[in-house]
Image 1: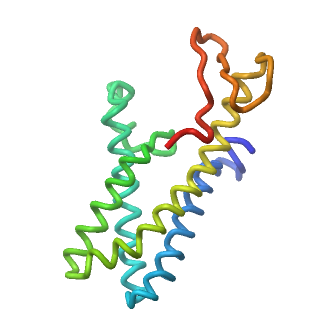
Image 2 (image 1 turned 180 degrees about the horizontal axis):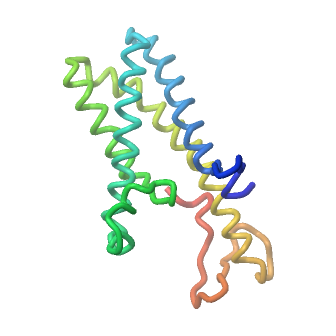
Length: 174
């Protein structure tokens, strides 16, 4: 598996993007199913999902830009180029929750029922997204550990040109 999964002429389909799309899809499907058991109509959950997903993307990018502001000193328009990488999970979580809660509150719906419906869906999405991170980090770890004495995933590795050892955060990152 590679960072670029598929190229169709000038269009590049990234592995992480595919997993992110799968995470959104399966999370929404889960929320629709669990919302049905709580008496929340599918249309309301789908509307909430659109707001939450857009808010999550904005929050994830905003957080990345704030944390890595020095990368954007040269050009303001680079802030909007999410295809060049740069989303932060906790920013997405905060943005998605904030956007979802505000939207649900604005619609005068039961926010606690929405939280019950969304809790497992968010966890499922996080798990699927971590699989996408796994494939990208695995490639980096393999590249960095090519000179290491052992190929075991738990061994410390040193990347060429680096004076420090690190563990691949494949399974340890939270």
